[in-house]
Amino acid sequence: MKINPKDMEWTRKPKQCKVSDGEVEIITEPFTDLWQRTYYHFRNDNAPLLQMKTDKRFFSFTVKTVFNTRVRYDQSGIIMYLNNENWLKASVEYENDKIQRLGSVVTNNGYSDWSSVDIDAAQKSMWFRLSRRDDDFCIENSLDGVNFKQMRICHMLEAVDEIPFGIYACSPENSSFIAKFSELELTECKWKKHDGQAPDEE
Image (cartoon, rainbow, N blue to C red; front, side):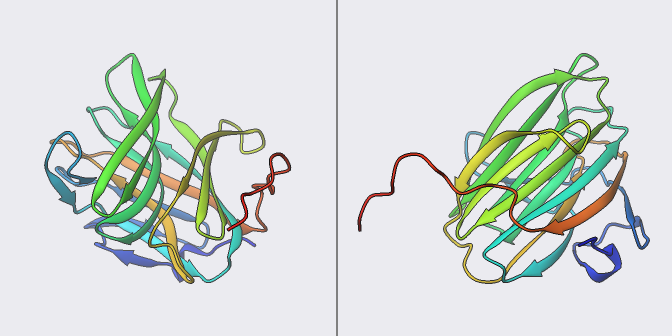
């Protein structure tokens, strides 16, 4: 099912943005970010988010993002923001003129972690897919929207029943860039049931 961004809701709507039936454009504001405590010991919670909600226990949400990032930490991608202490995100984060960080952050109970791999700084578009199986989640990325690679599997402690999910973009340093999102789609769960070791009996 194609998602109409006009049916989604803002958390901290940016001053400059455009929302049409099939595309969202965000112009980021300086010093906007999402992070909780770990390593840096600061708490940032002011990035703009555009989300929808569903009570489906099994689904996949896919989106394409195009970005002209150019200053350290500029980022745009996919997010599931439950509250300021429980959320997950995946993005391409600019580092310098040679590399970017393709990574994901999982925040449970007010502590964030970050896993990433370096990719070429020339890459200015990326597809992301978020899949849910009950309270567990899988994040994937793709260069073409067809062939997806697994980035992260995680459990979200506060993800019960209805959850919000969507897109975000931010500039943690003194920067601003344009992030465009398109091809938003909600489908059956693309993250297949595990067919290996049987679960433990509880």
